[in-house]
Length: 104
Image (cartoon, rainbow, N blue to C red; front, side):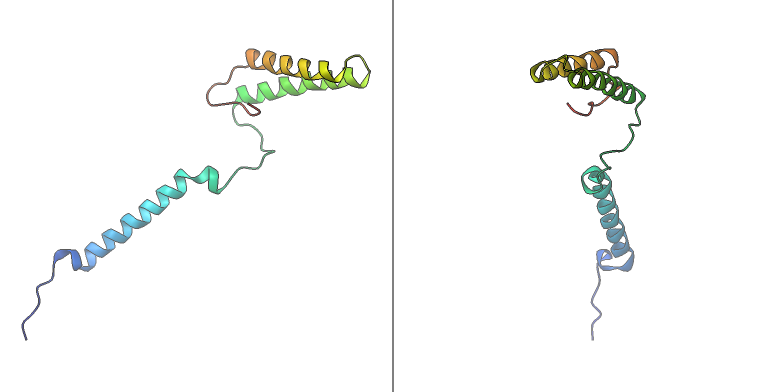
């Protein structure tokens, strides 16, 4: 019986290389889509100092506005206006170091 000549692509080393490339491609796709596949909790603390300063400023201003509303000093329409202005003020005082800020 004649021996059939095999290609180098049919050998064990070539199949191991192909398996390695397949695993590397899957690992890359998992890493690339990590934010969508494994979302961070919504209440996670910001890691960017500029973002943390913005959120602290915004929270302080919103608390002041809520206090004025509770005291009856401002109306609901004014609350929305003041909140938008407070958000703009905090964005101006604490610009992001990169990326987008939450709530945009």
